[in-house]
Length: 180
Image (cartoon, rainbow, N blue to C red):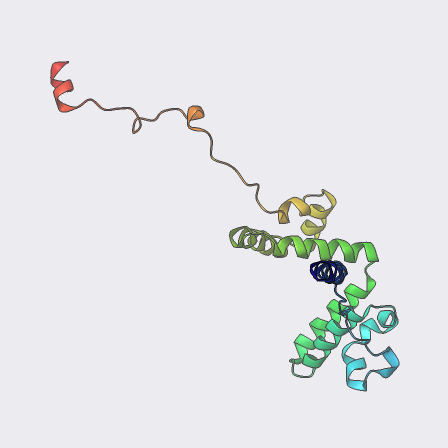
């Protein structure tokens, strides 16, 4: 009887061990397929016109993002619509490497602390108001990356490297001053 329980317990343990050892099946989460260019509504095609030639090459995630922008298009003012389409046109003309670089810069910017983001924004505003010829010169000299880079993080100097100031020099007490 004891042997039977022992064998039954061993079998139960082995069964549980194999059940636990198998990784659980996971559901594959992904972006559902997005419509091809010819499947878009006329309103969507009008809003996304600058992307027409690249649309069918885009991944589902990118299509979904652009479609969400297209939904807001009709509620935009005329100048906003124009600006959005101009930017789409500029984006469509970029090479994949240029797009990748811009995405990395955007990601890096979003990871900056708020105070450094503010400094970069101020530098960008200063660059933006430069005349086009000066902007081109800054780009040619390679200073645009420096201009938009966050400021270097400076650590405070160790106390041993700081020269003592008059405020830091010990002042004699009233009794010591009378002695001298």
